[in-house]
Amino acid sequence: MKNVVVGVVDNGRSITAMYIIMTAAEDNEAERKMIIDSGWLQGGNGYFPGSILLDMENGDVQFSPQAWPNRTMRVAHEFLDRHYKTIRGGELIDIQYILKETTSPRKAKK
Image (cartoon, rainbow, N blue to C red; front, top):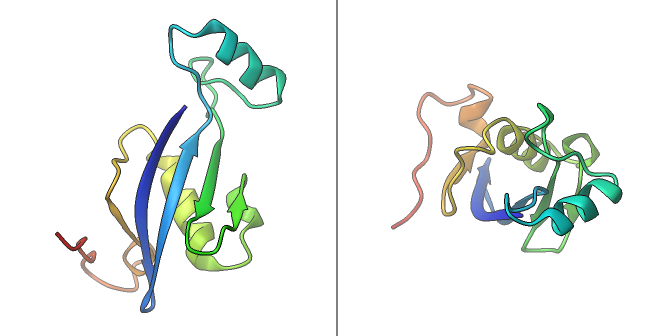
């Protein structure tokens, strides 16, 4: 499994979140089988492997972007699912920029 910690910002709100991609290491057949047997799709078959997004501030967690009750985490989860191959820990996910409400993305604090 791959996991990254990212920042999510929207309308003055800032959230630390952990994004988990449900895929096994290439050399771990037992883990791959467990993930598939538990209902998660496995990458490499042309399918998205599935993901979990955890709001680390309050413990809310969802397996589907559509399950989030607010736009902030729903849009962040959708964005992360689209960019899961290139997302890096520490990145800042700017919801207003993604939705074209602002013209430039906010930068993560150094």
